[in-house]
Amino acid sequence: MTNNVIDPTQTAIASPSGFMRLFTQTKNMREFTLILIIAALFISMSFASPYFLTWANMKAMLLSFSTEGIIVVGMTMLIIVGGIDLSVGAVMCLAMVMAAKMFILGMNPWLASALSIVFCGGIGALMGLCVTKIGLHHFIVTLAFMGLARGASMIITQGTPISLFSLPPEFKFVGQGTIWGVPFSILIFFVVVIISDYLLRNATSFRKIFYTGSNEKAAEYSGVRTDRVKFGVTVLCSSLCGLGGIIYMSKFGAATPNFGVGLELNIIAAAVIGGASFNGGQGSVFGAILGIALLSVVSSSLILLDVNVYWQDFIKGLILLIAVALDHILHAKKS
Image (cartoon, rainbow, N blue to C red; front, side, top):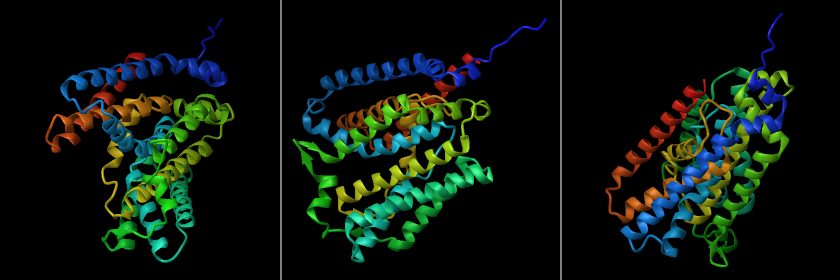
C-alpha cells in the first residue's frame, strides 16, 4: 500500500485561489511592515525637520519616485516570473534620446514618442527571444542590452545632451503640467499602478506570471505557455521603460545620453524590498511601490538632515542587501 503524497506546489498551480493563498500571508505581512516603517519615518522626520511634512516636500517625493514607480511595475512582474532586467536605465535613456532626435529632425513629438516606446518594446522582444528561444538567462541578456542601449544613446547624441526648448506646451504638460494642483506625471503613475496591481491580483492571464515563477515545470504540465509568459513580461518591462523615458523627456525638456545610470539599483531594490523574491513566484505591485516610497522617504530624510550625498547610494545598497538577506532566510526556513 502506497501513501498518497500531495505536492503543495502542484495543488496551488491546479487551483488559482489555492495558489494565491500560498503567498497572501507573507505578502500582506511584508506590505504591512513597510507601511509601519514608512509611518515611523514620517513621525520621526516630522520632529527632526519642520520642512518634511510640507506639501512642497511631499510633492517632491512623489515626483521623485512616480516615474521610477512606473518602471518598478515591470521589474516586479519580471522578478516574479523568475527574471531580472539590468537594462532599465539604459532603455529608458534610449527612449528619451530617440524621441528627442526624431523631434529635432522634424517629427511630431507625439509620434516620435510613440515610436520610441514601440522600439523599446522591440528591445524587450529581442531580450525575450534570447531568453525563451536561445535559453540565455535574463541577467546575461539584459546586461548585454544595457551596454547596447547605452552605446546607442551615445552614438545618436555623440555624447552631447539634446535640448528641446521648442517642444509644444501640450507635450510639456505630460511632464510639467498639473491637474487640481497634482502633477500630471503623478496621475499617470497612479493609473499604471492601479491597473497593473488589479490585473496582477485578479486577471487569470496575469496570475500565470506567479505560476511560471513559482514552478515553471509544474506550470507547463498544467497547460501554461511559460515561454509566452516570460516573453510578454520582458516586453512589458521594456515598454514601461520607454514610457518612463518619454515622461522624463517632457519633464526636463532635454535628453542626455548618460541619464538613468544606476537606476536599476533603485528599481530592483524597491521590488525586492516590497516582497518580490529572486526565487520567483512572489511579489506584488503595491508592495514594490511601498518599497520605492520607502527609498524616497529615506533619500528625502537624508537630504533634510544634511547627510553627505555620497552616503545615499551606500545606504540604499545596504537596504537592498538586508532585504535580499531577509528574503533568503525566509525561504530557507520554509524549505
